[in-house]
Length: 342
Image (cartoon, rainbow, N blue to C red):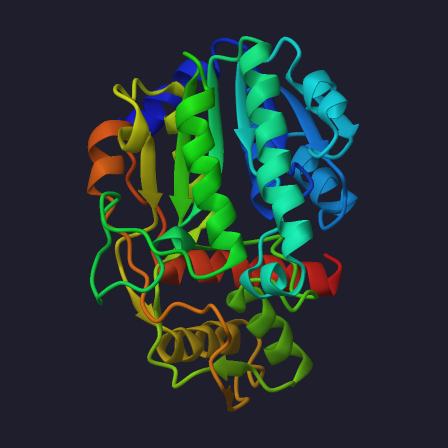
């Protein structure tokens, strides 16, 4: 039995109170679903700027419909009172709410700062003041900036290249100096994907956008020469990392409480395109025959990103459970199910 399986088994036997910010979003709704499925009491906080009620409804339904264990607060993390209301009586806080986009952070740096720094501070302070046991927050691989090709460790030099990355690094620093005895853990996500990732926004993940384009018969766009690499991590593994971080004895402080969360396997954007074509074609023949259009690289994009996950393995017991093939297959089937209204 893995540590994650052990923790989930233990959780199923006792109830704790969890807060998930960004509960109506992509990652947040997966956390809600898993925690409800384990019999936990869950409070979701979401402003619905980018989240959707459909994500909440699906999360509750997929968790065997344990709606009585779920409370939703429609509020903004930029409102301290909403944060305090959510954290009151909580054991664990999983902070996922953010404005997640490098391009958008350049277009609207004030909004990026208010959501990703001020909102973070509100949740950190509200959690600390409420006596929360563990505050787990979503950081990002964007904090590394340009790095040599190869796996990146948590102790590598940091060189944020966008307002979004600067905000995430700022969150890590605030966490170190303001947690005041509360366990606070930052998870540097690589490129997340999975069901419920919204393809309608130009700021969404490349996988959901490409799936949408393939199925509409539109042309997928590759920014740059296609040789850019990314470490694609499935939503289920991000859920695993959050639960492990909340319940593990992480020990130490500072950088020891920052962990890369990915697979450790790099994939070029061109390889991803061919992979996705094949999987979509398997489920809907003829849908993956579109050729890509190449466009110039975007401002702030990083050339290579690959996680060294040895620290998360050692301290948290984290072990990726989904290969790219498995994760894409689940994602495509979910996407097609939603389109077909099944």
